[in-house]
Image 1: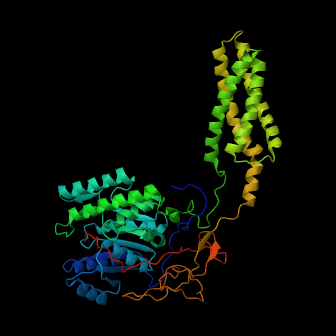
Image 2: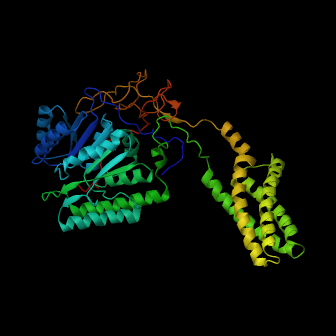
Length: 507
């Protein structure tokens, strides 16, 4: 996970403000295919639960992906009878296609989905979406494999589920515990950037989404759930497992070759929407420490070789002074080039002079240690001298790094920081109202602060007005509006193609 302070494509997470009347905070999508029997009791039960327990406005969207029974009629009746229920009809099959299409068209800041059989206890719904509302997490999933979860299902499904998650851990290094539980949620700003990267349109869709999100460093919250298996499930286990394994191979290959632009999903460090600069943590510290340690180790070996040679020609004090002087000059030159990245001859004499001052301090430490050794023992062994000098050099090395960073080469870093342009993120300054688009239900007003409308309409009708090259853009830091205030920034997307086809869909 990124731990630097540079802004990413996504703005910093913020707690969602209190919702205005008529604006849904949560959009729960129920993907269905030939579910005429279970759809009505599912929607009625979910609506009743949300009405009683959920403190924000909500919407329930039925995503009918090419049902051929009476499911469309049932969905239309529910939409006509319950104001919070909307119906969305697709002509192609695929759970992933249904979720991507509806989530991409939704104006709710929190997007969720659950299976129509409601196998998961609905009491986990509020804990699922609460971290997303608060700004703590980017995605949330229900986990049936947590120790505190209570699950009722047959041994066959239990084995398949655990084997599949074991495969994900071994092949894709996934750290989330349960990829297949049909109980997930995502923030809309994350979905806008993440969904175009997800290729699968079937049952592997949410697994691919989780793997990419985790690899990009997004925060995934897991909620233990109580889950009861539906014995009448229409999922074809063998065909679905085969397609999932193909998806694992495809995603693993893409990650290994670096063909996925996961840098689009990076967030700034911390929860400050102003993308604060982290104080008291110098930039490049880890890299410089590694470089200094490598140079220091080689310099120590060089010093010991020089001391052993000079010791054959004179006393220990003169041998130490000469060896330390030669190795100090070499050490300063190596650190100047390799550790602190200083190129050219400019300032080289100044840096060497300052390095000699640092050398004098090191000489005082090592010479003082030899004086103390000679005072304690009249004729110390050569191995004892080397051990004392190694310990003294260790202390001198730590002090040398601090002085190099804070004094000798600090002017180089200051010049670089003064010359570097301010880090910016190119994002679209969005209007408050979405543009018209083909949707089976009217679009609610967009959630969040109001923005002035742009005079130019984009060529592509999108609910977010940011999917075309003709959109005006303004450069500002993540979360910062053009007028200097701090608002929710939404990034540029490619339009989702809801009418694509997938002949390999297992459904």
